[in-house]
Image (tube, rainbow, N blue to C red; front, side, top):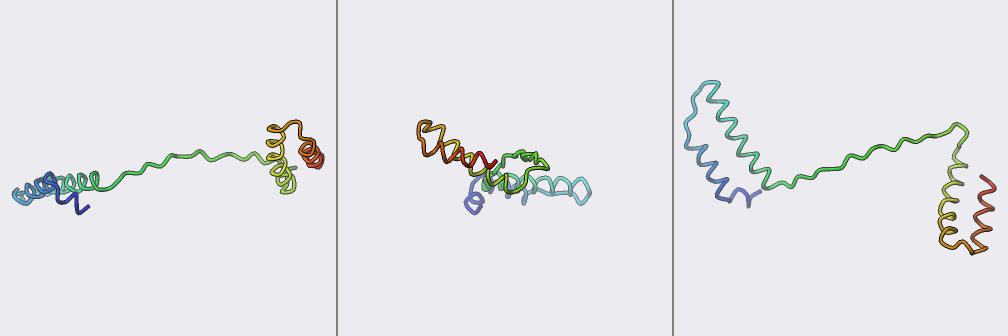
Amino acid sequence: MIEVLGENFIIQQIRDFEDSQFEQTFSGIDKATSNIKNIFESLANKSCKIVRYKKFKQKILNRKPWVDHEVRDLKKTIKPKGAKLRQEPFNLELKCNFFTHAEKL
């Protein structure tokens, strides 16, 4: 922010604000306020990096009443084993391991 305050454009805006005469009425106050607002906006735009976060949709969990934590834990163990089995479909050890866990489900 200090670096941006040293730029000629900002310094010129501040000098113009200091040199200008504002009426002591509502319109003069509004004009002075808008000038200061413009100075602060230009400072903020140049010095602060605007980070925009992506809005993530919340995943709707469709939990069935017959599914409890044991079933969910079994599914969590079976899914990676199924993925490994898809990579190595002829591995008998993986097949036996996968199907023994799948029987419990």
